[in-house]
Image 1 (cartoon, helix red, strand yellow):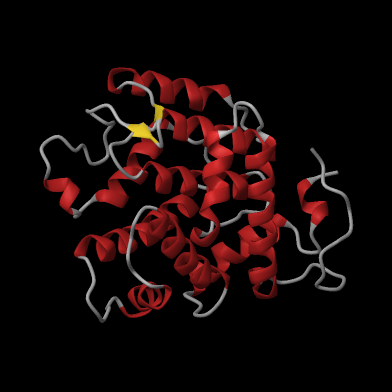
Image 2 (cartoon, one colour; image 1 turned 180 degrees about the vertical axis):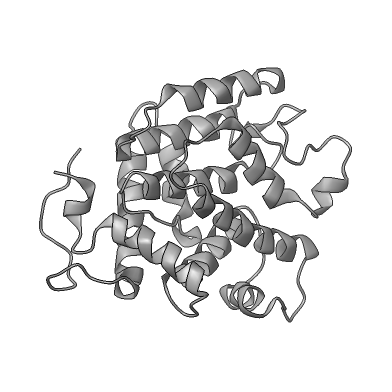
Length: 257
């Protein structure tokens, strides 16, 4: 059973719609809404205080009202650009240089960029932790990321993508921005491998964190969480994608894996 058999509209149609609607500059469609929803949730998980409405206004008008933090606005704009860079790279293998480029896009112009010890578009220089877990030492990050990128086949399964994300976040290669870069990589890996992409929702982030924390002992938690977010993405956005045939309903085919 392939990934695209699980839904009435296959994952390739989602990828094609994102690319076509971006080129059309279509308002209110899959590309537009994915940009807003992903930027809001991915940034909010990391502490942004912008509301969904403020995020939407930044995307649509490049303006925002209310009492907001400058870094939140800059990182939202940068997230939109990072998403576009991910779409531009579809069809080419993930590289270490592209991972660094995503980080550079995300953090350019932020207050972090003014800190001497912070490397925009570069690996962390100071040791850090995720939760209470140790991460890869700064001097070992470059080799660890290269080994991670080299370890996976060009054609990735859903399980490969989940595993890659866990291992990327365990390395925690940047001083800040690891989650957002990791999630944009994962979205692109799904699109590149005809797997339905998904957005990790801030309101359910506790399940995401549990999946990462307990992955080594029970990888099914993280996989099931991502499956849930796939279903949520499909339910919210399938109506914006051209249907290849048949009713716009979730198929009853069992999941693989």
